[in-house]
Length: 385
Image 1 (cartoon, rainbow, N blue to C red):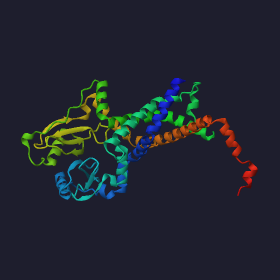
Image 2: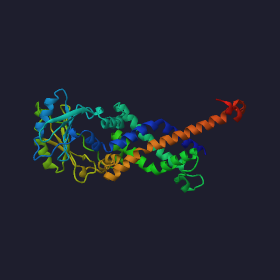
Image 3: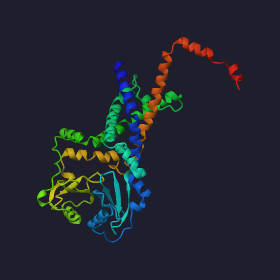
């Protein structure tokens, strides 16, 4: 009984401490599962265009965007994945200014800050609580606490008399307190595995370096090679034409290019990211690193030939976002996102009921009798206006 009480208190106070963070993370995560579809519905003029015969060179579009936004620096380009999709230029950082351009005409279609759109704002809530790295860390710690609750929950759920079936049912006709208890217990055990997976994969995205090291240790895998440096010997003022690098990348790896990462320091490489057919990650985890001055290939990382630890880690993101199994798993991910809200509300009600019961027990009997003597009888109550 002492052990059970200790586990109960751990489960209770962890839930109260992290509950609101987990509710925010779950609800916002449910929305951004279909982020791209929602964005196209809300801003079709920015994300979609009419397909034509041939796209103009990427370098031409790149130069147009630079002229339109001379005070901002290009960090990433998301390449069109369909014939109707536009270019997305991320300026200054991954979450700052988004600029959209037509791949056929090169026209700049418009721009916005990420936090200025509903779904962009929700995505920032989900990833960093709108406060940057501190919010990201807080969410990572909350996910760790969710893992603790997912471990302690089954211990508390196990019926003392061994009748497991009673812990799997909800008596919808029972009194409110019993109904809330049944809901928390049943939904908690049914969702335990899924919440554990979501929590762990979420932790892996926040504390990625630590999780990568643990994964490599457990699989006896070599770490990923460090990003190479561009050579300062061939230093020039301009990056080689981006279309030449894209053609070179296509000859090395045949998969479609998903993102281009531009160097932000004098030593950084230019990185072209590709998605190979066998990859689960929607953006791919295959990379080609180029010297930003000479265009020389510095390193090629193909996901299929990566060490076992890296291949395992590469599955965590598609599992977390629900893209691993396509539309059915994405829909299921939306449902899972509402479970923290349900469990937090029912757990909070149970805690309040328990607190009231304890307060009632601690009240001296003399006070209760004095209180009862002040309560009017039915006749006095009926005489009130």
